[in-house]
Image (cartoon, rainbow, N blue to C red; front, top):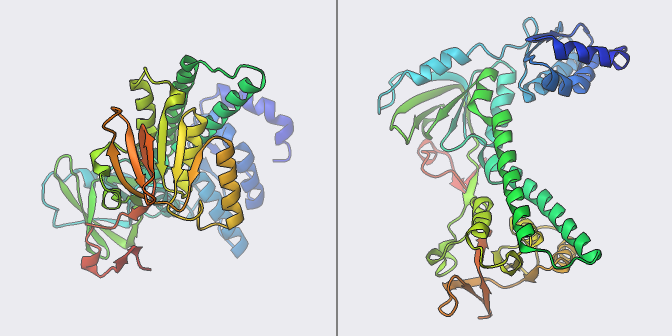
Length: 425
């Protein structure tokens, strides 16, 4: 470890030219090992094919056990198999469990359940974290996912939103610099080309995160099986998993317990806003595709002429309002609350509103949306009516007024789990 900085060049030359399947660390000091791993992790992942690491440590003493736990978590997060005598064993269940899961082809669940130490229902960020954490300590894990592994975070939340915000900031800076140095009339062709690049960046980032961190092919070597389908609880430690594509059902049993990490979904807004179901509208689930698709389909209308109405002054509504505005569209943000982000300090809300308005977003607070209709005079235009009866015209509407937890139709109430706005703990 002490000689690593001086020998770094020679070490890199070695690992670039030598095929490696595993690396052993000779340090028996867990503190030295932990910080060495932190420094060398990127090199190990990018410059070698090594996926297995061995280090001669034994858990003696509270501090030593804690450090070894930290090392194990670090390795697991980077999808590296680690082992040391009587400490970590992460692959011992994967082949048996995968075979058992794929052996049933009946449409009714097998009378004999496949047993794992832990079953995780939900393959989003929370479910994946729980599954990896359990697998790090040698527990057999099966994760159940009805749609795409990765959940909101990878596909409709954190990853696309932060990628879009970063790209929108670059686009806005580009626009500001053009105006500052005398080129205020930005060509629509150049703007559309930029937006196509943003869409490509969002898609590639989502796919990369999925392929590197979330896919079943990545999880299985860690000792995590993935069962595709919807889970229905039979008791506190047993679920039936039905694959909606082929109708097959498998029964899973958990030795220690079942983790429910099923996330949330946009609530049904059509009950609150009359006529919303008669017009196409966006939510945070489909805006990543629909926004760019609408730009591409309508070549006659310039990007800067597009009018987007955003309903909801919470975090999702605010960040998407700013992003869409920075990408060139006209945005009106409507909030039923007296101020944006009503759960934060009033000073923060006011500062946010000033910043959005300075960038060109029209903010309307303390007004709810009563109804939505298609304009009879202008084809493709949406008319939104507020509590004050004031009409707002737009080309598209994005609704971001809340989410509801995914806890229905899972059999939770049948086993005595109390459900109100989520699961009572």
